[in-house]
Amino acid sequence: MLYLVAARLGQDVRWIDDLPEGCHVRLYLDERDLDALDVIRPVDVVRLPGLGRASQAHLHHLLGSSLAPAAGPAPAFTVFCDGDPLAHSPAFLDLLDQWTQWAPVQPLDCATDPALSTDRRDWISDLPVEPVRFCPATLGTLGRPDAAAWRLAARYRRRHDLPADTPLLAHALSWCGSPELASLARQADLALRPAAGLFAVRQDRLLEQVRRHAVLLQQAQARTRDDALLAQLWEFAWLLLFGLEPVRLDPLPRPARVEPAEADPQEMQTLGPAFARAMAAIDATLARSAPRQSERAPRLRLPEPIRETHPRNATPSTAAAAAFGQGDFEGAARAARQALMSEPASEPHRFMLAMALAAQGRSDEALDEFDRVMRQDPELQEGAAAAPRTGDGTTGRPPQAPRWSRV
Image (cartoon, rainbow, N blue to C red):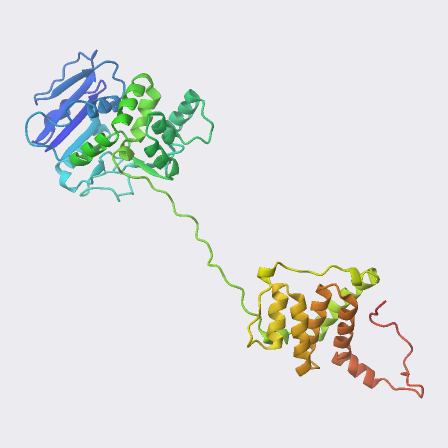
């Protein structure tokens, strides 16, 4: 059995005679509406003062003394609509025959022309159903322009003098006394609403939510009676009120944290003499610019938790690279010297020692190590061997300025 609650706003309601058997009808209309109903079917008629929108009639019904017909079996669903549901859902009468396939909260109208619709995800047995997906903060419709929703949002903001970033549906729910639903709407990115206020609620769900939100419904009824804009905006809240929760989008995926890899001693072997000469030249230039300041140069020290103890089984070269990467320049110099004891001719180990000393401000010692790196440069050694020497031990070449020098 179905219980249909309609609000006639000047429409022709003769479609009521075509409703399926077992559908009880309650019709709300304005007390000044004197037009004949022209229906044969028995209908419960309730007249209300100043009825302007269907939401006002539906709120009155939910707060009435009876949410079900006085006689007959309890209804499976209550259907809410205005006085002309066929204008918003051409398949409305056929959808009523398919009530066993409805969800507990079921939109029943179609936002677009069914003949042109390409979105059939919400259809029921090839019958068109298309609720509106909208933003609860701005009331903007997803996927298509909606001038009526935009005008409603703009007028509601002006009426209540709201800043541009105020979430509108949350404001309306909070104003009517439901911080719980207001918080839910404020955090949501998307929600659903019936395109023209045509929807159904399973009877047990309806009774549960009416008891739960009795205070909200009472304040909403009082405020919508005097505020036509709130009465219009309230039609955006029906599905949320009856438990069809909105959607909050997931945050953007974050890249997995990558732990720094342990220094590979093999990578140190890629430091060729050319790179060593370049770094030595830079350090020599800095040393020449302040030759007397090296002893007073500040040492770089890190907080104690960062200066970790290196594994006991690490080789001196691995320990030097790891210490340098952690900022422990004293440890790096100490480990590099240990590595040079086993490999005195290793350019990478001596270069690491020179860099660790330079990082501590020990420029003179660093330059001595850079000197040794350059003297081991095969290009320099080959050039010295090729030049003929005179009796006094000098080469036969004219004197040249050194490629770099210490001050």
